[in-house]
Amino acid sequence: MPFTELFDETLDINATENYELSVTAASDGLSFAILDSLRSKFVLIRSFEPDEGKNFTAEKISEIIAKDDFLLRRYKKIVIQTPSRKSTIIPAALYDPGKKDSYFNFNHMGDPGQVILANRISDPPSYVVFQVPEALTEVLDRHYPGITLYHHTKPLLWYAFRRSRPVDGNYIQVHVERDFFTLVIIASDALKFCNSFIYRNVSDIMYYVLNAFKQLNISQEETIRFSGRSGKYDDISSGFSAWIRNISFCEPYGNNSFSYVFNETELQRYLNLFNSLSCE
Image (cartoon, rainbow, N blue to C red; front, side):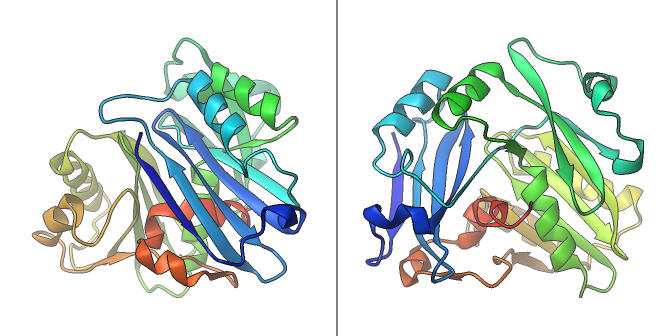
């Protein structure tokens, strides 16, 4: 089981009531970050991934949580989010909580063993309706009673709207998960495009992104910003560089700082973990 851990020497397991915990839980891995709220500094990243070609079951996620020395401590604040490809966004003015399932089923065919949840999004004022494995929600509710599970687009759009405001033209962000990616396009403080697509290789990602460019009349001279499972020297950035001149990688937003030990990783890979604590 691949494992990553980076922690600051000031991390104190007995001081977690002064810390905030951000968790990402899904079949493709469990990761978490700890923010020392007194110093406004992230002091730990820890990540567990299944072996190649495998997924975590809900029981495995429960086992990881139960055995970890930090995940069941008391915290000042806890936020948990999960990436899920199937979702739909409803303007807040039109949203009726009693029709949550109908909104989802209008655009997607629900999968067995899934439940449909909804999150309020501040920018744009809307609700994201999404499906998540019922077994996962039961595990998380058992370990974190009463927790509200965030969809990955909630912190993603919170970040994208704040980063887009100084940008002339289109703000374009590609957030990559293991089996799908989410493309967000914002212009003039309005959401022009937000959708997720399954991919098998870099060519699939390029096809969907360049097709969106064509449909929206976006020049290939504009900048694409990557986050999630993407890095400066991987196949994704190499593939896009042949077609897109301006490529960059998202940097965390806000007033929180990061331990120097985080210099050993590319922070865009954990962007939603950092954003989740601020996107209420």
